[in-house]
Image 1 (cartoon, helix red, strand yellow):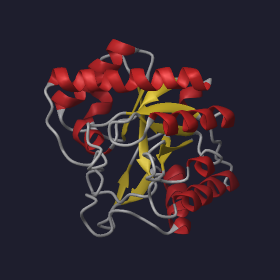
Image 2: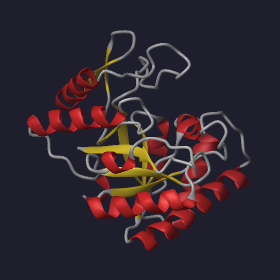
Image 3: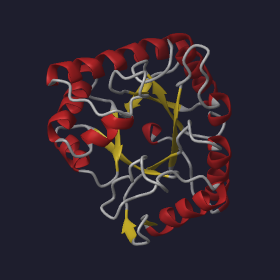
Length: 251
C-alpha cells in the first residue's frame, strides 16, 4: 500500500502544511506545479527533500486558480486544458531533474480531480496531455470513477486512490467540502478506518452504508489540520498490522 500527500503548496510568505515532516512519513508526494499553489523556490525545496527521503514524486496539476486554491470549477477549452497540463508537468520535470529526482506520476488537484472523474471531455483532455508529454507517466485517480477505465483503455497506467481524511457518498464520490462532515479530523479514527478498508475492501460512507473501494494508494491531504499526526498514526497502524508500504510508482 502507498500513502500519498499533497505537498509543495506554500506560496511566498504564505505557508501551507509541513512538507519536511510529511516526507518522513509518506511514500509518494503530489507536488504542486504553480497553478493552484506553490512557488518555484518552495517547489524545488520540496523536491530535494523528497529525493533525500526516497519518496516518489507526482505532478499535482490543477486549474489556473491561485486565489481559489484550485477548488473552483472551471470549463477550459480542450486546447487550453491539454496545454495547461503539459505545461505544469514540464515545469515540474525540470525542477525535479535539478533536485535529483523525477516525475513518476500525475495526480490532478481539487476541482480538476473531481471534474475529470466523471466529465468525459475534460478527463480525455488530461489523458491526452499525459500521452503527449510522457506516456510512461502513471495517472492517480479516484477509485471507482469512470476515468480509471477510460484512461486504461487509451494505454495509460492508472492507480486508484482512497482518501483517509474525506467522507464518501454512497456512490463512491467524495462528499462536497461545503457540507458538514466532509473532512475527517480524528487521527485515531482515520487510521482505524483505513486499516479496516485495507483488510476488507469496504469503507463506511457518510450515510453509514458500507461501500466497496478498490485502490492501491491512500491520500492524506497535507493542508488538513493535524495532517502530520494523521499520516503518522495511519502509517503506524498499517505498519503494526503488517501492511507493506511502498510507492506505487516504484513497483
